[in-house]
View 1: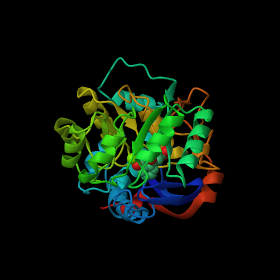
View 2 (view 1 turned 45 degrees about the vertical axis):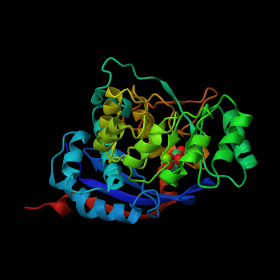
View 3 (view 1 turned 30 degrees about the vertical axis):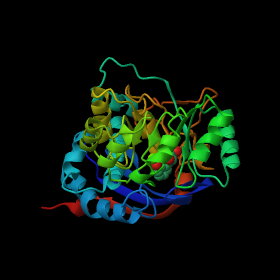
Amino acid sequence: MSIDRIELRLVEMPLVAPFETSFGVEVVEEHIIVRVDGDGITGWGECVASDGPWYSYETNRTAWHVLQDFLIPRVFENEIHSAMEFPKLAARVRGHNMAKAGLESALWDWFAKAQNKSLAQAFHAAQTAQRDYVLPERIVVGVSVGLQATPRALVERVRGYLQEGYTRIKIKIKPGHDVELVRAVRAEFPNVRLQVDANSAYHLADAAIFRAMDDANLLLIEQPLSNDDIFQHSKLQRELKTALCLDESIHSADDAEAALELGACRIINIKPGRVSGYAEAIKIHDLAARHNAPVWCGGMLESGIGRAGNVAVAALPNFKLPGDLSASRRYYKQDLVEPEFTVDAEGKMRVPTGPGIGVEVSQKNLDAATVSCQVFRRNHFATQ
Ligand code: OSB
Ligand code: MG
């Protein structure tokens, strides 16, 4: 069994509405789609870097470089027998987690298809949190709502998502647009499951802002302080009843262990792309379970290719809180997969059960979104 062809595509997908966070506005989402082929099987993955180093230092150009010059050659120079072996091969490359995760996710799909297993089944077999766990058919999902022009507009946007069935709302905050947004949404929807995400926009000296929302019955406050910080978050957590949740600061299971043992957060947002792939995501899931800390699956506005893996991982037992896993149409007019992802009236999403990602990639939609494409073949990297 071996992979002999790898294709990278830079894709551009216009969002149905601009998505604004404390670090900027996304209008067109740019990702890298990874395709691996061998033995008549095709695996698909998605690298969630973006056009600029805003959420993390990675960009699609750094990811393409690291994939082309370091990670793809490692796959061609070695025989690998499971996606779980990829992190060892990739370990010599420091950082560049999104680049690693893009290729690893395509390998997970390829190996799962080779074994006629769904990704959810493959991930289930790899987790150690609860062996006798039965995979659910559907999972509860949430929606992440970007900054809007006014608090009124935000409330109306939230109302629309609640009408579509979502039962958990996350709102983005930034300095000057925080406590009033929480109050506006809470006043209108007193019982909705609500959380906020600051994307690293505050400093410890801003603690009073978070104390001011401590009585709003939030599920959690996501990544209030610096993107690499753990220590200052541990100080802030001590001042609040509301659970902190780390996103940007957690790049590995070691980071997660430090954060949980230091009391820097009580909940972890797992984004496979941020932590170098599903193998590390599952390690964090298992570790958090041992610490009795719930996790949930974050999102990077993925196409259906990346979403499929995220939905599968979010089906694991310690994903106790709804993820940022919304319907395809919440992001894109046209997704890259068929059928597209949908959310039902109970705010739940089906976990695909077919082999691998369990959805078909639409070649037509993929071609329409492709900006550039490059093919790599095993024999070109042969060393003898
Ligand atoms: O911080 O969770 C974040 C999107 C891009 C970059 C960072 C984040 C987000 C989201 C969107 O909140 C989550 C989604 O994909 O629905
Ligand atoms: Mg976040």
